[in-house]
Image 1 (cartoon, rainbow, N blue to C red):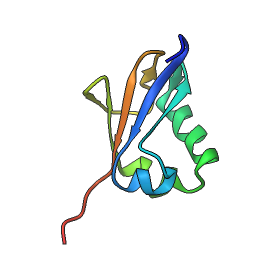
Image 2 (cartoon, rainbow, N blue to C red):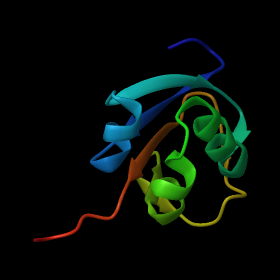
Image 3 (tube, rainbow, N blue to C red):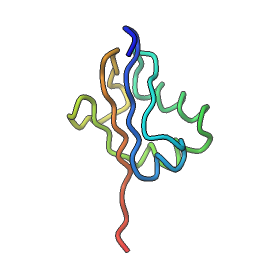
Image 4 (cartoon, rainbow, N blue to C red):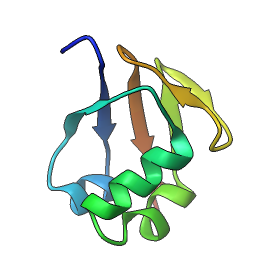
Length: 84
């Protein structure tokens, strides 16, 4: 990990969009901007996954899109899971 990066972990449906379990991105960045960045990279992920997902930063659940993700943080995107 370089000095200005953070790790993002993808689970369930988020992995289907990204075709990966994790990646490194540059910070700092607000969640709102991160969602836009990811939607540019993975078309449709914002509406299809991100807006309905739970998000943790450093193992703590966060709410709202104004949260600032800093270098060294670990972000996890946890989509809703349907039972069937």
